[in-house]
Image 1 (cartoon, helix red, strand yellow):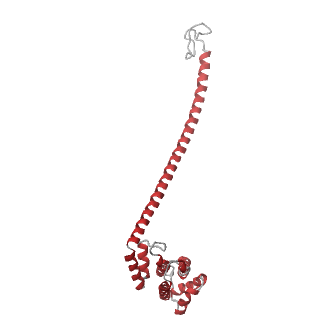
Image 2: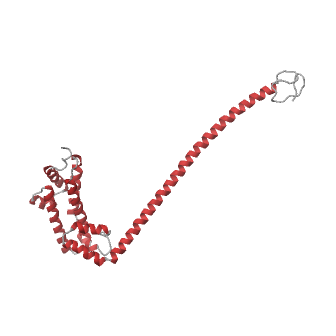
Length: 252
């Protein structure tokens, strides 16, 4: 490139002609073009960085979520598998030791140790549907609710806030209601109805004794308790709860 004034050789970096000292118009325009280019480049580069950063964050979040989902699925699979294995082991043991187990269960019932019966079945995962133990189905169901009634009564005796009264009473009324319904549909199970009824009758007498001892029910109230509706039971239980002074130790 030559100077338009003296014809001397110039470059785009020469703002003035080294020969005549006149300004180089091409260099001035080149500087403006380069500045505009740099501005556009910086803007574009910033947008690219922003998009890339956002994309990276989204990708990172997606990867984290995917990993968490996979871990949850693995945990669920392992948990289900572990439960299935445990269930199978208990089923095999229940079948293998059926004679010994049923003899022990009969002994608990003979001694009227219904909590021991319940704990024995729980520890060995013997349920109403466990093969070989169907004849105990109704008794096991009643023993479950018997244990819940027993536990709830003793929880009532502890120093508790008055605010827990309603939930305690409702829970106890529900357990008593379920216990009273345990003999329903007895003919749906291969049970000895006469023997089962005998066990349930003794268990009912035990529940009546518990209610008299820990809630102050009279003999007549305890005997009629199973005939009441759930709502009637709740009213009576609340009355006895307050008479016994449960739930007042902390508030006082």
